[in-house]
Image 1 (cartoon, rainbow over the protein chains, first blue to last red):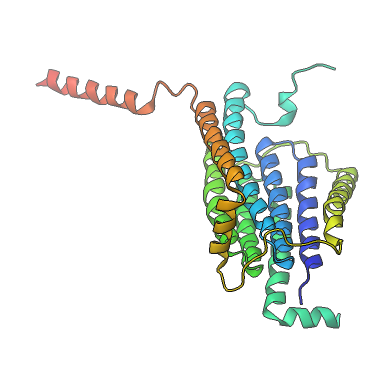
Image 2 (cartoon, each protein chain N blue to C red; image 1 turned 90 degrees about the vertical axis):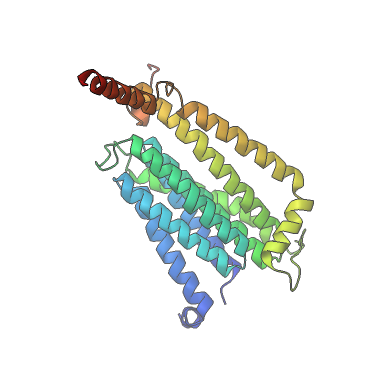
Length: 100
Length: 198
């Protein structure tokens, strides 16, 4: 029988993959992909806890996480397009404007 | 090992191990790939498999929402954004590929998971909104969402509206000289030329 721990371990592995991506990516679009990976990992943990404790609260929080992810993508991609029109690049290293 | 074999022969265990192996591989490709197209395709298929996890866990409505919102809307938005940038070429980024990134990423993720998972192993935990027997998941979710979580639901709706307006304003700047209008002028010029010829 698959237990809660199995799901939490998978969720932790996926979350750490996403965090490694956030730490090493320099392209902003790829950085967004890594944050989506992290949000999905958290959703798995919420759904698993909801199932094993017979409680709907976890699923509710997963819905709100999905709503937040959708609005994050809408605003973030708008900012990304503005940045690309302004700088011609979406690389984080090109956005450094302060010296020091 | 025997435990693992006993698990993998059940249908639930087989699906769990298959989905988890595939999602880990696909998300690893998403994080490591140099090509935006490959990363996006791997992310989309990983999200489809995550909805599979939700179906195994009995959260049917959440799985459907995952398929519609993530795989449908979010990935479509990403693919539209990808068309603004050059997607076919490999992106050049000087990634910090050192071991310290992997060690720090792994350790901090582990710490976060432990912090958030530790209260779950408390014995005195009780279901706040328990699931009802013999009621479908979508119905149960609807009852809780529209009674106990009504205000957060409305706030989320306002947040999505704000995000939509922000997206339109940010992406729609300098779109006042629209492509279709200039095309209409070209067509009118063409018509005038033909009239002149007559």
